[in-house]
Length: 107
Length: 158
Image (cartoon, rainbow over all chains, first blue to last red; front, side, top):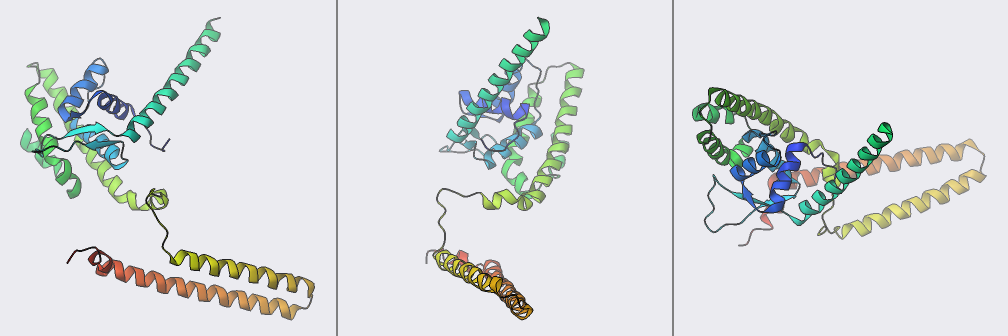
């Protein structure tokens, strides 16, 4: 996996794009609904994350026939999907370890 | 408020603004139109947006300044990368140099007199100096070529 720290906003943006290609506002709303209203991204944070993900080749812009500069659509690349999968596996392992530790503590 | 937002966008680097500026402004407008009427929600939204914008601008400037200094990017090899042909020649020269040095060192190891050691030291110093000079000349040529844009002109179809 590439050395790229996945903060919570970045992870949520990736998860949002994993389902389908989206534009900025759609990502904002999806992140809000995924986190149950806990994570509210500002436009500055969102585009900071999008720029980093574009730079690393994890996401790309969808080529459109009549592209509007103020509403562009982004989608996950195969590299992004692969790295997201690795991150999810890592989190799954961590959750399993955490559950085991908590069980030991309670016993 | 959109005007204030646009003014704050000027804090970002120009390249960033060109790439995302319009999109960010449009998104801000859309999100603002979607706000609930409660005053608290509005205040919270503007605080979040302006703080996000300021920290984002700072981050974008840091990224821009630090990016060329990150050593790993330079050595990140693309799959389509090919070494130039001159690399083979240079590697052979380096290999020959290493073999000769080992041979010389072996002969000196048997010779206990100090004169041979001094000869080797001066020879090594001379070789080092020559290599540094050659490297400086090559770097200078590459730098001038890059600055003058000669390598870009080669890609232009006439």
